[in-house]
Length: 238
Image (cartoon, rainbow, N blue to C red):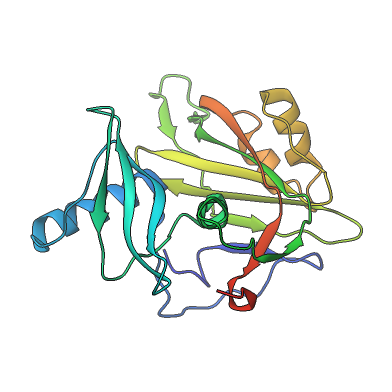
């Protein structure tokens, strides 16, 4: 889809101007995106090894050099732990990073932390669009089924008046991914009735009007963050 022409952005004062651009993202679920990336790596980079059912459990450091040379890993398949040697070790685990804890266990000072928490929570689910039934004035004519026209829509928060945000966009399998988000502890519900009511209280009811008669496809999943945290490793003595 064309990002600036096909996607509707509601910014509090109304929808933003739409225009053609060369920004053409592909809308899909995260599962499909990561699956395709993984397949590309496996097919085109034989020097890359992907370890399945395995998680990193710690660091091994050469204390005299203060250099991390290995990580420990645990395999769920064999229930055994061993190490991997690395010239460069990258922690790409994001918010759930354990590096600070691992360094603390190795006897290093815990790094200073800066935490900013806007108390974000969101709920997401899939909807299957309803089939709109249209008949002509002639009762003898056959009934035709036309799916409704839905535009990918992003409704942004408008603090301090409205702390809610919503998004709807198409993904594979003829499904629509719907997400609602709140800041300042305005956490959305994970039951359908509460989900719909929350969507109804967005700055505009366009997403609500789109999904209120749609079929929920699966469960509604909720997520709460504990804020964003910066570890000041650069201030550590060693």
